[in-house]
Length: 80
Image (cartoon, rainbow, N blue to C red; front, side, top):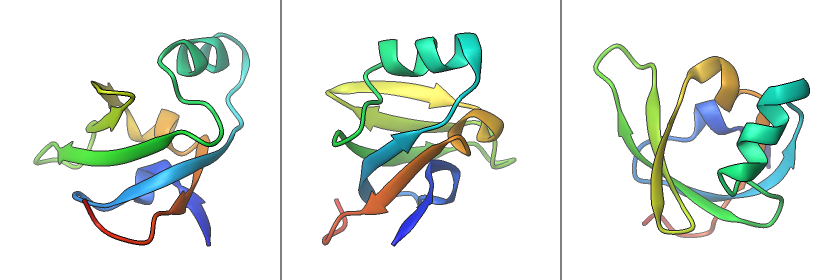
């Protein structure tokens, strides 16, 4: 089941299935290592719910919800 990265619950992991960002944001997202097939996990969510921190390729990155909604993921079988 595909869902937006912004909907990934804290402690869960998924695989990136596609990135649909406009212009410069697409470049930034790919430079951060968010590429199709990459495993990503939600590590932290701010008290207000935005931004959230994700672990990807060993790095912890923060993304605003509006940017995370442009990345589609497929849930991994087991939680981290």
